[in-house]
Length: 479
Image (cartoon, rainbow, N blue to C red; front, side):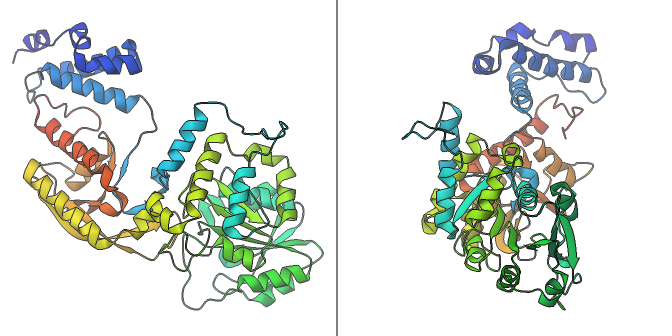
């Protein structure tokens, strides 16, 4: 096609903006934003016209659709994605999705004023954590509780409030890297407490802790190595032994269980992970854990324990810098209320549901989805056995039986299955999958049934875009 003729065949911007399909996007994003998106699409098409491999310009409906895709993709940098990796607590994908009840609670308090720090009965100033504190006491058996923005913040605050300028004894085998290069020794430096390492990487005995206690000792800290395991020739004291030793010398006993569950039945199906209620029963003065891991709630660092320990933490000036906002508090409270009834929470907290869904049910879904992809889009798709993992530092070596749909790339790609996975990742919605043995795997343990239509739409759009005229193969992220 003649280059000039191809350019003349492109519709004017105003003609595109007048299409009914863009009425709602204009209302939502504004006419200027929609105009910019349309111009970007037209510019991509113009740059492709005249090349040896170029196709005729796409029709108006394709231009409208691509403009809508740009608007949705660029409207916000943080976008909902489909997690097809089989990693339930995927840090890169935001860890635990929260329950519908938590979402509703966030929306309600975000859209209006609330009694965040107002006691409605007395009219006096109230405590913003009073609602969650009562629920945490009921769930764990602790005398007091509070929460901050994440568990790293909780650790800094606990060390600062209880041991600033003094020593805290920790087993050398528990000097973990929390993630993102945040290491426990660095957390100590920020807190003002001094780290006293004892034992060796694989073996630390109670006698090592006892020998390290001196006039400068303030606490004994046990840290759960959530994201790794040392197996074989190993030894660590039990928590109750550390608690008894600490209390015999007038020291604080702190237990950082990281991603640990709140109690043995929450969530179900997770054996061997420490729980907050068990640590409180063992006599720990303070227990720390994340809210967005095995609890299945929003990101936060939860602290439960004795009144004196929590009291010192809550009056520390750093508490204000790390405090929770009203939306996180609303989501956390809704999640904790669900956790009071584990049988009900199993159906309502997404993470708990993903953990406990029978593999046989996932296999049936995988077969149905593979059949539909094959019949509707002509893809080479098959149901296969898979292994999922909780992730997020929880149960790192224990797989969960799962099922996946394996898809071969539907058209030739320079990078084969890797390019196909990349194209899914930049689609709408983004689909993050695994690649194995020449195929892309969509693990259904992390894809709720209600998201299957959106997953199908993403794959369908990818195939249609590839087969449409002037498919924009030179655009970034295209295939």
